[in-house]
Amino acid sequence: MSKQKPGLDKGTVRMNRKITALLLSAFVLPGLGQLYLGRKVAGGVLLLIVNILIILSLFVLLRGLSPVIAARIAGGGISITPTEVLTALEGATGFGKTVLASFFMVWAFSIVDVLRNNDGN
Image 1 (tube, rainbow, N blue to C red):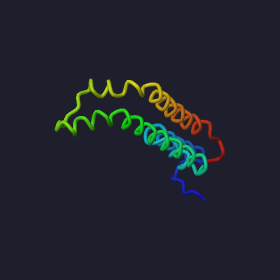
Image 2: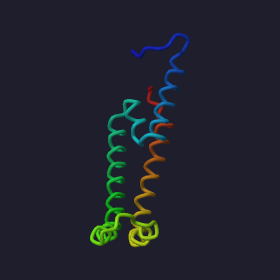
Image 3: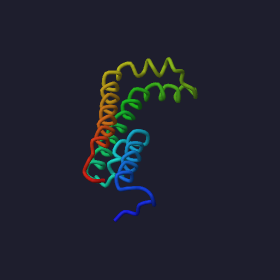
């Protein structure tokens, strides 16, 4: 049994939980809304996918920037210009765009999944 505030019916409590879940999935991390609603498998899978995509994006970023960073360290420099970053990442733009598009698709799916969830939570 869930505790209800005085004056709120069960439908209002359910809607408030759904709004909270939507905000968690939309603005914090995809999958948290599903976990909040008690959908542990769906939330866990979404969190796993999001974490894999974040690790892939860091890999792409570091793989592209490592030669520039190494050259700066070897040369005694500290700062890297935005032009050097863009030039270094040119070779990884296709894979990077794919990873970014995948992240946004998972994010959108997480939001839509919370909105269409009607299993009594």
